[in-house]
Each structure stands twice: as structure tokens, then as C-alpha cells.
Length: 280
Image (cartoon, rainbow, N blue to C red; front, side, top):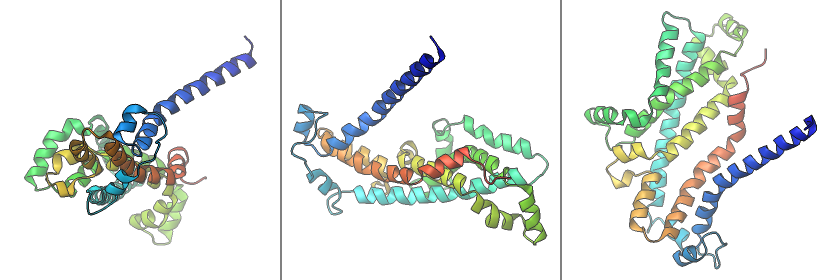
């Protein structure tokens, strides 16, 4: 087999593999989206077919504030998401800048210690963390979800920001220092504006992770009025366990904001993970 045939086979296998991945990813979304426009009878009769006729009553019910808890759960998820993103971006920018641009004794040891957080997923630490939050009064509060989410993102996001900040030329910092700009001023006026791609990447990853978080809100929140969308789906599924059309419609509405935010910032995410801060 010559080189040309080998390349053709390789490309064909790659295309087949990508098609399989796309089908595997898109198929559940296809079923979920179309299922929301069907009745339970249509779902049982034709799971994959186009709705005929299209049913809008379920979406109308969910989007009616007077008869559905969807908007309340959406508001709760949005508040927690914004708070988590703010905490996470501020903390990882400060820690990443500290480890990238400030020399002090024990810097590498402390940095590696923070990176140990990559080895401990949320599920492992959930019990001691729950006990600590109970002792300081964070149970059944938004902060009880925001702070742990930001903390468990800190190790990975600090690694990203440090790597990005280190690529900013030293000449810029020296010039800023000559003009009377301190470390904090350099961070706010030059580093952050130059680091828009990585900051956007971190913000969107945190946003999607917070939006889809289930375990932490389940353990922290007791008041149904504070339930996030994943908990709202669970609660809604409990009410309509036999009517999967309603559950699929709720899932569709819950997924739309996260997909929208991700699609909006997709280019920034790719740029943040693949490019440097500035060219020398």
C-alpha cells in the first residue's frame, strides 16, 4: 500500500470515527428536543419520528410563571452561576498572577500544593466540606454552593492563568514600573486586558460546570424555593414520572442557556487554550 492509499484510509477512518462521535453526542439531544414537542402517546409509538402534530402545551405550561417553577429555578441557577464565575475568575487571576510574576520563598512548593487539588474531586471531599459548611452556617444558602464550586476549580484554573500570564513579556512590566505602576496596577491595566481569551475560557467553563452541578446543590439546599435547574428537573420528574414528554421539555429548556453561552464564547475558549498572551 503506497503513501497516497494510506492517507486515504487514514482520513476515511477519521471521518467514520468523527461521525460515530457526532451521532453518539447528538442522538440524545435529538430525542430530548423532539420529545418535548410530543405527547406521551407519540413518544411510545414513535420515539425518533418528527412530532405530528406538534404539541406546544408542555412548553407553554413550563414558561407560565403562574403554573410552573421553571423560572424560579432558572433565577436560582443564574444567581449561583454568576457568583461562582465572579469568585472563580477573581481568585484564579490573583493566584495565577502571584505565581507567574511575583518571586517569593516557597513559591513553587505552594503552587504544587494548590495543584494537589486536581487529585481530589468534589465527591471525595463532600462529607467533610458539608460538615464545615454546616458549622459556619452556609447550608441552604447560595454562598454554600458558590464558594465550594470556585474552590474546586481553583487548582486547574490557576494552572491555566499562570501559564498564560508567564507569556506576557517582562519588558511590559518593566515599562509599567518605570511609569509608576505597581503590581496590582499592572495586573488590572495590562495583564487582564491582554488575557481576555484565557479569562473568557475560565468563565465559560465555570459557567457550564455551575449550570450543570447537581450533587452540591442537592446536599446544600433544603428549601425548594432555592432549587437550581438540575434539582428542578429532579423535582419535576418526580411529579411527572410517567409523562416523559413533560420531563424532556423541561430538560430542553434547562439546556438552552448553557448551550447558548458556550456557543457564544466558543472562539474565545479555543483561543484561550491554544494561543499565547502576546507575541514577542
